[in-house]
Length: 199
Image (cartoon, rainbow, N blue to C red; front, side, top):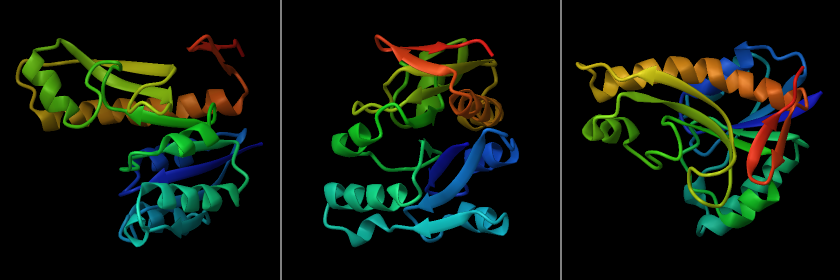
C-alpha cells in the first residue's frame, strides 16, 4: 500500500479527484494545508482523512517553514507527496528530501508557460493547444521529469476562464491516473525521463 500525503492551499479540487478515484494500491494518509481557511480540509475531514494546518506566516522564512512541513509530512511515513494547488515555492532542501516521491500538476504543457498566469499567456501567444502536466518536482520551479500530459484545443473564443475550466477537467482525470501509476510501482526515472512500465 502506497502512503500518500497531499498538500493543498485552497479547495483542493485535484485532491478531491485523487481521493474519489479510490486507487486500490493507495492510502491517503493525510491532507495538509498552509492556510486554515483552505476549504479542502473540511472536505477531507468529512471523509475520515487526517488533516493538519501549518501556517507559513507563523515561521521566520521559507527554510524554517519547509523544515517544519517536512517533519509534519514525515510523521505520516509517506511514500508519495502530492502537491494539489499548494501555493508555495519550496526550498531545494525540501525538494531534495522528497526526490523521486514528490509530484505536482501544472496547468500547461511543460516546459511551456511555467509559473503563474499560464492561460492568459497561452492565449496571448496564440497557441492552438494547451493542457496540463504531471511531473516529479525538482528545485527548478515547474520543471522536472514529466509523468503524463493531457492536451486540449484552444478555441477561437476562449478566455482565460473557459480555457482554465476545460484544462481543469483534464487535470481531474490525469492526476489520479499518474498517482495510480506511482502506486502500482510502474514509474521509473531514467536519465531525466520517466519510463512507464506496462501493467
